[in-house]
Image (cartoon, rainbow, N blue to C red; front, side):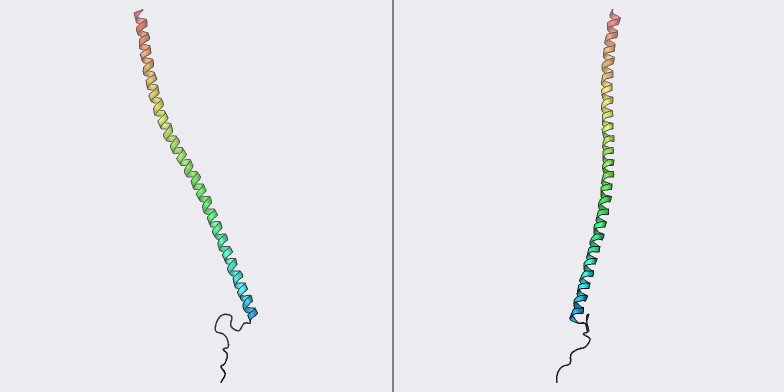
Length: 106
């Protein structure tokens, strides 16, 4: 007794001709390719946005660091200048006392 061929196929593409199956596979491959392109575009946009934010934050942090250093340098320079003023003032006082003593002697 000959065996009967199964009808319906039970899986995807059952009852389709070879041409229909090829068209289906091509459409499926095309759809997957489009999805991959969309995912890549989304990822690219996300990374570009993230890069912009990082560059903005970097610029802001650089400004903060520069301002902090300038403040420290100003304070240091001010302390040095005060010390120099004190030394020059003492030297001036000594010279003035010397001149006064010369004037008193004559």
